[in-house]
Length: 155
Ligand code: NI
Image 1 (tube, rainbow, N blue to C red):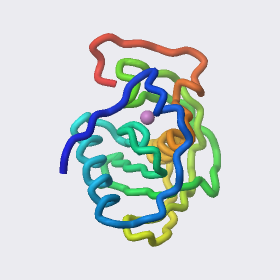
Image 2 (image 1 turned 90 degrees about the horizontal axis):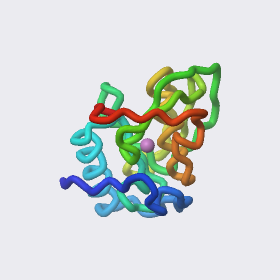
Image 3 (image 1 turned 180 degrees about the vertical axis):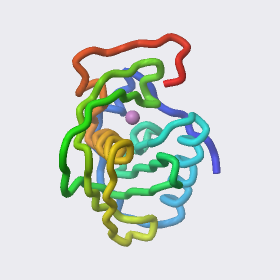
Image 4 (image 1 turned 45 degrees about the horizontal axis):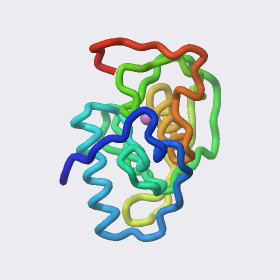
């Protein structure tokens, strides 16, 4: 495993639309392992392909219950609403209040290509929406009314 460089701020790669993953091979598994290690080291609760310069539909998340790998993920159902603070490893020191669904159901493939469904609430729902946005070149700053900046903060 290796820690990969996280692209930041105005890097144009963060604004690209990613292509689906079609090959579930050792190269993908290496990427997933590296992304999980990079996310944990940062530390953060989610990381998407474009953040490490890979324009493929790959996401890793860990809100405290272990690593979730989501390949070609899609939100298939969402319910309710939550409003709360959000930040991103690609925008260190910046945060804002973002409205997201309270509960979402995601469809995704695992590292072997098997489709699965995962339902998450609160932080996990927020994380799924945030990471899947990254795959379409959308970042959380696009959803905030006011960008907050904290110097030396942990976000
Ligand atoms: Ni992010």
